[in-house]
Length: 295
Image (cartoon, rainbow, N blue to C red; front, side, top):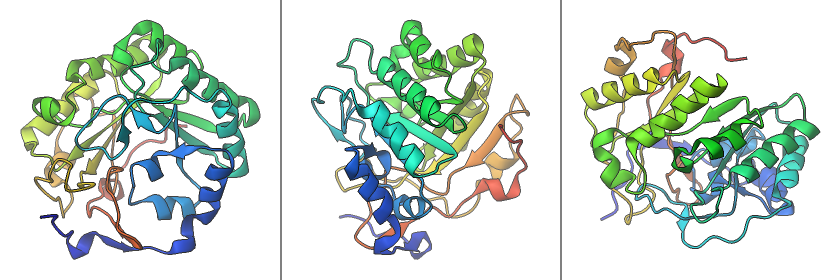
């Protein structure tokens, strides 16, 4: 049986809140992770004229059981997509753009060149816009990471997603240490601002979260986001716990590198939403923690 979400997770949704961004995405034949993953923040973000662009198609070559993005055999990348993303960024008058993708294990460069072209297209058309890229692990191959980082994104993001023990269940085609290697390489080789995120509510323990935090901080990572996992459909991995209150113990935890930024997202981007209803997780660390600006 598909469990109902508690009342404290519900937010009001208005049908017109995302029409402008939706029309723009259709005009340029673009995908957003907001739509493909059925993100519960979609209406709120679209209303503010923001979106996370998802390049390299809408089908992923991996099949993570928490994620609502379609898995299967992807189409060839659209060579016009980098310019179309840049044009959409310009039309939306964005000051900060976020570019992610499906995983493309089928491509020789796993989509690295397409990422680089998109970064350069945005910076050429909108030189004042900051660009964050949320990349797959690309098997932590230096020659592929060099292609992306050589285009000089303002932030290099790669999500750890969960604690090491749960990788076999939550990220069966990924490796915990490999993801750490991506973050470490970006920081060590390019001194890039690095960012990662995890979901909680999958059955992890507090000690496992603390261990992950220390592992991430050991890579030199600048930003760690923590979001509540919510089940997209009954076919996805079940929620083990809902965190209604602030993660007080994690907030108070003294990590090895106190200079790192700790933030928490109010929700996770893998939740599907019934018509005209959004849900949000009810914890939010950033209200009670000081953290330094990145730019």
